[in-house]
Amino acid sequence: METYSASISPVICNSTTFNLNGSHLCNESISSRLADKSEHQQYVIGLFLSCLYTIFLFPIGFVGNILILVVNISFREKMTIPDLYFINLAVADLILVADSLIEVFNLDEKYYDITIICTFMSLFLQINMYSSIFFLTWMSFDRYLALAKVMRSNLFRTMQHARLSCGLIWMASISAALVPFTAVHLQHTGEVYFCFADVKEIQWLEITLGFIIPFVIIGLCYSLIVRVLIKAHKHRSLRLRRQKALRMIFVVVLVFFICWLPENVFISVQLLQRKSEAVSSNSPSFRHDYPLTGHIVNLAAFSNSCLNPLIYSFLGETFRDKLRLYIEQKTKMSTLHRFCQAALTSVIPDSNEQSEV
Image (cartoon, rainbow, N blue to C red):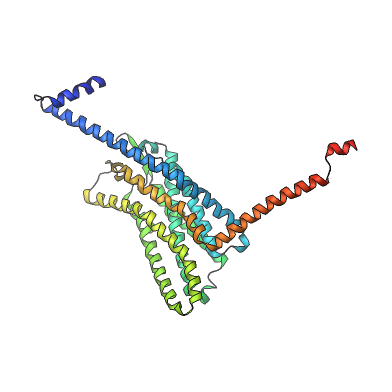
C-alpha cells in the first residue's frame, strides 16, 4: 500500500483535473518530504558537532580536570585559597564533562523515555551549573577582598573559612538544583516523552539565580577591583603582580559568560514565547521546534567545563610550577625505581644461583 501510494502521488500532483482532496493530499505529501529532509539535515549537523566535541573538547575537559585535582591534591601543603576554589570548580566541571558524553549524542527525542537517564542528566546538569557560577562569583568576591582589603581580610581569608565557604556553596548548589529536580517529569507531546525541567517558574529561577544575579555581583566586584588597580599605579611592581593574579580569573569568568549566554538566551526566548502566545501544556516545547539550536547551545554550555582546565594551566603560573614539579617527581621516582631494581639485581644473587653454591 505504501509503495502504491507513493507511486501515484506524482500523478495526482501533475493532473489538471484533481479535486480538492487530491490537492490537499499532494500538499501534505510535499510538506512531509520537506520536513523529513530538514530533520535529516539537522540530525547530520548535530551528529557532526557532537563528534567534534567528543574528539577535541571532551578529552581536554576530562583529563584536564582530573589533572587539576591530582596535582593540587599532591601538593596539599602548598595549597592556597584560590587553589581550593579551583579544585571544587574542577569537581563540578568533571561531573558535567562526564555527563555531557551522554547528552551530546541526545539527537533523538525518544532518548528521554528512560526515566533514570532523564533524572541523572537533569540533576547533575543543574548542580554543575549552579556550583560553577556560585564558585566563580565567590572567587571574584574573594579576589576583591584579597586586593582591596588586604589587611582587614587576613582574618576572614583563612583556609578554614575557605573550606566552610566551599561546603556552603555545594549545599546551596544542591538545594537550588533540587527545586527543578522535583519538577522534572514525563511530559506527553503526542506519543513522544520528554523529561526535563520544563516549568516556566523553574526556568525563570535558573536564569535569575544562575545567570543574571551572579554576573551583576561579578561585574560589581571587578569594577571595584579596577578602581583598586588604578589607585595602585604608584607601585608598578605591585600592580603587575596583581594584574597577573586577576588575569586568569577574569578569563575564566569571560569564557563562562560566553559559553552559558546562548543557553540562557534560548531559555529566555522560550519563556517570552510562552508568555505572548499562551502555549498550552500539551503543545510542543521550544526545544522540540528548534532541536538543532537547542543542541548547539547545550554544546556551548558543556564546552565551558572543558575549557577551564586549559585556562587554569596556561594562565596559572602557580599551577604550571606545580605541574612541572609533579612531572619531575614522577619521572625521578620511576628512574630511581629502575636504578634500585637494577642495583639489587646485580648485588643480590638469584635464588637458583644460591642453591647451586
